[in-house]
Every structure is written in structure tokens, then in C-alpha cells.
Image (cartoon, rainbow, N blue to C red; front, side, top):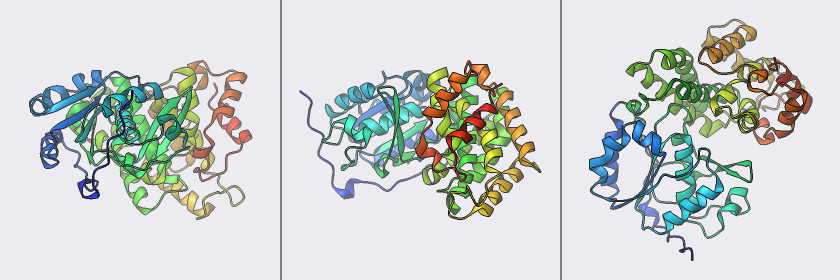
Length: 394
């Protein structure tokens, strides 16, 4: 028999959403936060490989040894509802003072889902499908990313896969109270993971700049994120140093803050079917269409603009992106993006990943997340999408 959800704590128990600056050694702040929250019982959600390989386990061993720690570490990449349900069962069996999430985006999303869905009376599948709302906040969540990519530690979103479909949850309860971004935890990342996570940060930043839901603050975050990613990603993959790892961690965190406001757009919408169908890492799947979407949005007109600020506003944002890239034309900027993607090992053509056939292209057209397309500044029809995909076919 499943235990009833824990009774929510009083409002004063909730702490304001805090942020820890990106810095080497920031993981030491975990001790300060746990003491501040008077944590005796901790629920640890971690990617086992990342937890050990990043050095986080060794760095936190002494601190965690003084507390009761319940671990949840056995789950698949990209949170599945079945894994979330197991996590909820474990979560409810323990009196939890706080949740500590360590790993990449999957681990951080898993922690968000388990600690918040586990507080609700409704079945998790109803909550994931949006049939029920989150009514009770979970315990404080301390998010510690071990990749420089998803920015999940800075967002109120979480992803869950159910019956082969991807669902995105968005709620203020899902925003972690504390984000510990320590570049030293990324120093052992292999080149491919550095590339994929870094490309995700880059795409988040660029898409945020032209997103319909962007505002002055999101643009501020996204501009710096894009600049840092453009300047440091190749070196992070091929010749990483402590300073370069720090720059990429900052880019990823800022990109997360940007999309927390603006959300993502067409490249992300297209990417999920590519990842699921071809097994391409998320960041690389998104980056495959960043250049053609830039070219597409650069031609926004009064007849197809969906941003209420108008086509001229969209074109000015594209112009700003060109400045960031040191480019004079959209075509030059698109070429620079494509060269960067290919230079860090990412595919730039559908044929490279076995998706160059007519049938595969049509499957992608039918599978695109229309919600994210609505946040793209230029309207994207199925025919537009087909032409866009054709441009990266071979």
C-alpha cells in the first residue's frame, strides 16, 4: 500500500529562491545550505555515474555522513514515468527535510518530478498529462549540475516521457530553491558530452533571443550566454581549461535563466523527434536546425510574424545575433553556426544520422511539438517545416 503524501509544511518553512554564483568550489555551499535548513533527513537524487565521476561523491562524503540520506539513483536517462513512480514511492517512505539533486538534466528533472509529484494526492500520470494541477510544494531542492548544458537548475520546467511521448511540466514549484554551479564538477566530462551539453546551452540562448515570450531580462541573460558559448565551446571540447569550463558553466546557467522566462522555439520543437528516432544526443539534435531556423526567422515579414512586437522587432533581434557572431549577413552567421556544430562533432545533415529519406522527413514534420513552434517569431506551417528540414537533408 502506497503511503499518503507528506503533509505540506507551513509557508514560513519555504525559503526564497536563492542562487549561488558560478565558481570553482561552490559545492562547499551545500554544507552551509543544509545547516541553514536544519536538514537531518536528505533525499539524494543522482545520476550514479555523474555523482562519482564528477567528484561530487568525494567532495560531499564528510558532509552527508552526518545526516540520514536516502538515495535514489537507478533511473534511465530522460525521465520515464515508471522511474518517477518508483522515486515517488521511495520519497514518500521517508520524512524528507530537503532534496539534493546531482547530475545532468535528467537527474535534476527527476528530482523536480519526484519531490513535487510526490506531494500531490493525484496519480502522477494525471499530473504529467496536465489533467490535475500541482497544489502542494515539495521540500527545498538543491540542484547541483554536473554538465554545462541544460540549465535545469535555473528553470521551472521538467520533462517526463510516458508511453513514448514527451511531456513538459511547467510550474513555479519546480524551480529549485538553490542552484550550486561548480565548474570543477565538469572537468572530467568526455568531449562528446561536453559538446552536446554545450550546444544545448548555445541553442537555448539563441532561441531565447528571438522567442515571442522574451523580455528585457531574458535577453540580458541570453546575450551573455550566447557570447560565452560561441567564444568557448570549441575550446571546451578540444582544449578545456579551468577557465574555459567556468565560462561554459556560466553560459549554461544564464541560458537556463533566459529560457525560464522566454521558453524555447522551433529548433527545440524539432529536436525531440530527432533524438527519439535516431538516438542523437539532445543538444546535438537541437543544433542540427539552429542555422536553418536562423535563416528562416531572418525573413520574418508583417504577414507571417507572430510576435506582437512586430516584424521589425524580430529582424532587430536577428541583427543582434549577427553582431554576437561577428557576421554581416544571416547566411554568414548560419555558416559559422554550422561550422561550430560540425567542429565539435555534431551532425549537420539528416542523412548523417540515417534520417534522409522522404519517409523520415515526413515523420519529423508530423512529430514536431506545436506548442514550441507557437513561440517562434515567424509562423511555421507544415510546408515551411518540410522545406526547412529539406535544407539539412543532405
